[in-house]
Picture 1: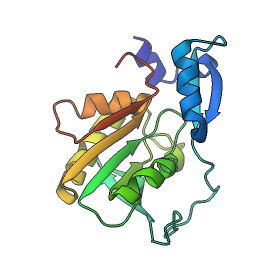
Picture 2: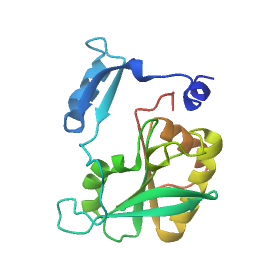
Picture 3: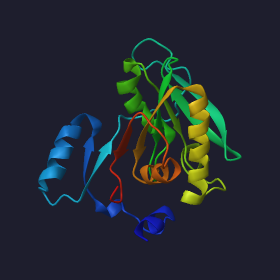
Picture 4: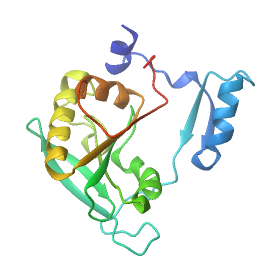
Length: 193
């Protein structure tokens, strides 16, 4: 029931965040959470700052063209997406949580693209470039899109991995149940995964 309330936007979990750390201090954040010091309930990790208006064909410091924006058709909806990395047979699918956007995958791309992976991220319903759109941030809208995303990705890449945050993790568990993925990373999930 709790996850349904969160997904419907009827329960705000933001007040549970007691500490915020930049991505570069993630080790200290995990140590704080693990030790349960300083009244910690939930720790938020903020990714590297993103530009206000991302542009296409940017370099992520390697001198190579590592970012392309595109629109995918998923479950009959036009879904803004961003693809990081040089052409590769392997991809990480990155899904944000409530209040997120596709560009949050950039800091993760900075880590995995030099290791030969691409990163594909989308704006989930009601987020990023889809804010104010007709689709809601609910499993009934997101899960069919994610199933289409996995199918489309399987046609282009040989190896698929998943990095999903909070409600994006929950939606992906619903959408990808029984599917074969190379790896899956769930970041700060709301519920007991």
